[in-house]
Image (tube, rainbow over all chains, first blue to last red; front, side):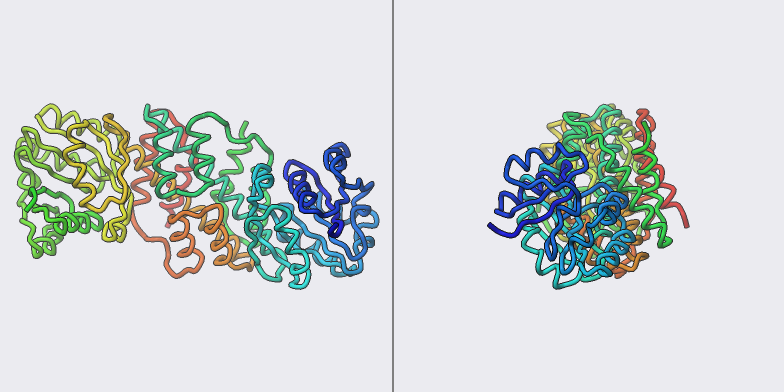
Length: 269
Length: 269
């Protein structure tokens, strides 16, 4: 059996990603705030960790896939986590957080003798199960080289190296999510105008997604919106991620009119 | 030589599209408000029409590729145009106009014994030259069948039939242009946030356009925005087309928050 990996955060995305590691033959020590979410993985052979620190091991690898800046920072600050990972451990951070939080976390790890790398995930839970995740990747070269095979094992169909500077991969994830939301909401506005005028939204989306907008993201959102077969997923993620993008852009003085409007739209009842 | 086609409107897009007809062996009678814009085509063998009516011929085919509702309606209302086209002529309207204008124009033609079909063009002038235009197509079946070969000759790489109801093809064009502008402006907002935070916009765009947004429209706009090599084209088209989309959506009571914001953005100095 290959190395045992710590895995913190078994939500909708974390659970299938961790499951992929088991399938690839890795051992797992898993922790989740809601304990029962680990049950299915434990039944498949994962060990249950009592705390985040208990999922880490000296010189080992721990993965986290959590909600936001605060949840990742709380795990890293939790009793014994950084002590348990050092010396020489690597923390693969896969959550969608801000570049500034990522930089703070990297500094905390470096000061305590371990390494923080960022590998946020583009892909919904179905894409994790289908091993079709896209992952931007940043951090110190040696740590990245060590953990790179794990990204494939977790279901990456492609990994994009953004160099050593922490924050770069996280930034791409925020921009990508902003663009996905902008696309989805623009398609929605277009589809509503077509339908209100008595024309066929389905034919409209079929043409646009076979021509100018011939990309998977448009086909899936567009068809769902045009047929009304599936409403856009009701989720707190768009509001959270637009907020992270806005905060990051605003900190650097970049204007955010479109993401600002989208944030109002997704917050509307 | 094949049939002689009337062609009204030799702007940035009209000129290469008309040139494609000449290349395909059709005769041309061309008219443009600014007379000199016909010179290059006349030098290549096109006849010069003195008026829009003079470009039309009884039972023949005339193409128009103009700026907006008013310019197409003014050509159709011009002295002798509808008289000259009847009986049995077909007007292929390729301008980006509103569905309501398209319906009014179709009724005018029908009342006078000719047929109006709509075939607005997705594609920039370079795409016309490269014969890579996408064309949504609507109107009475017999007229569409008659003029269909002309669309290929004008440079279509794909024609999408939206049925007999006039307005359907024009609606698709308005939605498509709205979505293109939403994309371009969202990419711009993302790229500015990346750059302001000191990260590399080019690497960001490379990843996103190779994965989620793997479509030609993103690659061209994204690379131009990320490298700063080419600013977005300064043009009055986005403002005009967003206005047409908004008016069309509002007439039917559909909400337009995103296109409304984009209209403010493109109008800002």
